[in-house]
Image 1: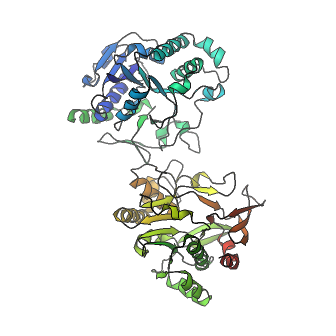
Image 2: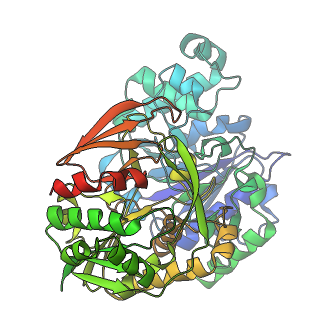
Length: 279
Length: 287
């Protein structure tokens, strides 16, 4: 079964998502074993990739009109060129080989959405500071940043059909199902969680596992005794020449969702490119 | 000799660590069924001789190892129940445990850690060669532990409790203790690197925690640790001892109100050192 990672980005004036997707693809190529390192990029304006030196890190580049913001990800099952896919957020980096996670999902799941995130210290995040809507409305605690699915699955098809329906009618679904702590904008996490809850499949598509392990660098859930605006105001972002990252005193071996978009500097890209070229 | 328990005791003007070591050592010997050795200094030995507890020390300890006298410059605020005082203490040579121990496998414990079970004997066969307690567990149902009891600093690494450390002599444990010594000798630099700012008081817990963090690949690994340490804080008072039943007056809100609590057959860290000493006779009679 042909497996690959899928990154869906919309060009934005605020953030350089193509550059982030490029860094993520480089880090995948640098760390994942053969057969588990394919990457497809879906983008609404291919010309924004012209400045990138090594477009070969994208095995597929698919240009398509996308709905604004993150709504494009509701089409992940239709956009992917792979038979089995992990759809990732663009602002993530890999540091070690996690192919064995994928092997497990290929064997055991049609659809699996991450339901845990970790602090930079490796503690499971339990603080619901950013997830009050989930708690108040008893949504399953899904994180769309790592979504595994197989293309030829009936469950996947039904699930994403509902996901698209909710994305098309966010106000109606929010009014009906998310009356407490109603979000101003319905994000992908909420949409996936709501679809899983409505279909009653949350335990089938997001049961308890020790992986995937993804460090979520949002500042207010790091178990600090005070509030913070940015994680890296307090814990240094130290990316070394070997492509390894330390956040504060902690070596990051799991996937890092770094959140702060300005962390992918030209220097970071250059290091990742050097490693990719030497491989 | 294969397995044994090691204690360090250096008397200060305020606290009779020698007497505490006799209590703690006797309990460890009785409940773990292992030999116990003491690392101390000439002045503490001299005090034991003048205060008539040296014979008991010779009886309890398998070996009394005389270390160089260490000058103390460490002070901390300790309570005896509600009464606070600033006391000097000597804790600099705990990093030398690897060098001093006469045992191939050593359980290193603080003198205020009172053993009333053989639970720690379960860890001798661990595949990990250095084990430290992962956390403190307050005797109060609702923990009085602060952030600094769980982390080295606000953004820093997990705090392990060097109150109990078990190690097997080998290359890895030598590196571990060498690293602890290095951290101790460069404590100011490590305070910058690990963002803790009280550098006037050297803490073994911090040095051991950083060493473990580094050797665990700059990560937290609480899977290879000794059990959390049941703890009464220094504002609590050890009130009564009946064999392995200890009755405490504890202050759940960390103020001046006290309630009764007890532990039975549980290894326990009694941070009110004076109240251990006051109960010397009862604790020794309990054996």
